[in-house]
Amino acid sequence: MEQLERILHVDDDDDIRQIAKLTLELIGKFTVEQYASGQEAIDNAQAFAPQLILLDVMMPEMNGEATMTHLRKIPGLEEVPVVFMTAKAEAQYAEKLIRLGAIKVITKPFDPQNLCDQVQDAWASRK
Image (cartoon, rainbow, N blue to C red; front, top):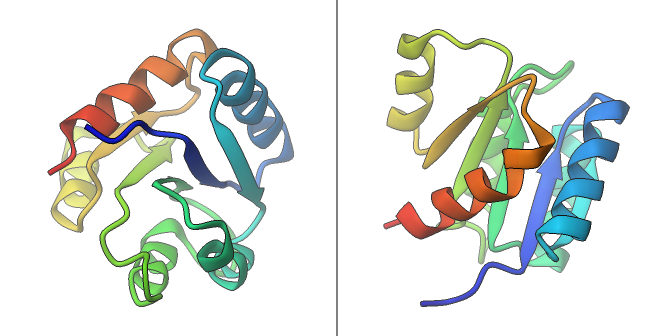
């Protein structure tokens, strides 16, 4: 099985980006590229060639669902697994995101101690 190494993380909250990057790089030993908006991710993701996309749901201008739709149109990114991170914790909403194509939904605020395990579990469960 291919090992997860490169994660693209998109979140408009600077604090969340910093905590996630620190956690994923130091504990998980992943290479993490981050963007504050969906448009930035769309503009730069292809060059990074992520193996997994960690995507905030609620962002200004372009939400996570729209960002995922646009990223999936980029050659080479059509099949990259997406994990959503959201404060909107209702089970029905998480199920909707899974139906749209996400492989997992992580609830915010996330526990930095568990983030790497959650990401690895999602990676292991991908189809």
